[in-house]
Length: 115
Length: 116
Image (cartoon, rainbow over all chains, first blue to last red; front, side):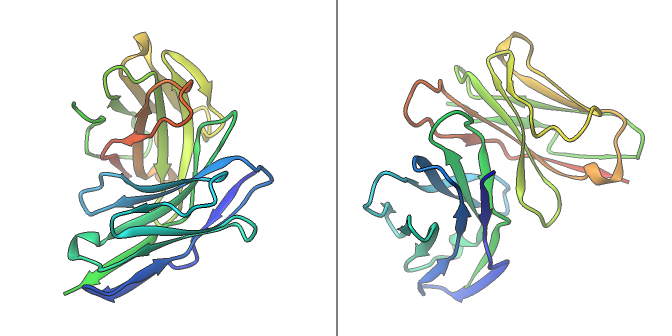
């Protein structure tokens, strides 16, 4: 069974700083998807970024980028020029590339951006 | 387009009572998922509908939980009788057909269930 681990329960940085959230996963599959979801206080889960395992290039979405290390099974999220609106719970998630479409989530990291 | 809608947003019930949660997916989305986050823990998969059929219900914790999706539109998740450990946030998500290589999940705001 796949597992996802987020080792940082909480993080706090100053506005405009760069912050990196860690995520490791365990799977025997070679084809899969990885995601970062954001859950602000409003509770709406929002997809931040996704990575397909067969792609070597790291995904980027504006200020958000990932460092995907397939051999190490690591998938960290970097937020550049952090903003107050980035304050949220961040969840790393895994989805198999075949068969089951369900997401396997990590425990979450509570990120606070301070003014 | 309207997003995934969940009702109620918050429910407080006593142990032993029954609660029914509702999810309205995005129109046209065949896939509907239920997830649950117990306080401080990871979000866990409960089950997956494809239209009105249960594709995967491996995450349902026990037979006190009953999910339905009559007509392949909205879904309900009933907990009967509720226990203290059922407290948490219940999320619903939907996506389009799985024949696409990637079909993103759209989540609702969740229902916070508190069992006292």
